[in-house]
Length: 90
Image (tube, rainbow, N blue to C red; front, side, top):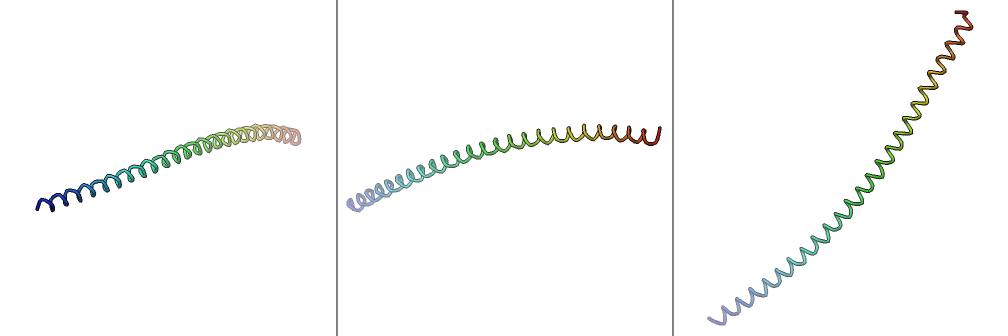
């Protein structure tokens, strides 16, 4: 009976050692995955920042174009009104 208990204890110790090894392996994998996710999040943040800067630049250019178009339309409006008044004599 003493030998059976000792065998059972040894088997439990071996199982515990294997479980600890599996746990360490899982922790290593988890750390590796977390590192990858962190790096990808950093890369994503950089992409978002770049896109945001480009969108801001495009918005700025578009605002300048619209401003210039508005100024040109005002000038043409005055020129056409002036030509109209010259032609009609009013």
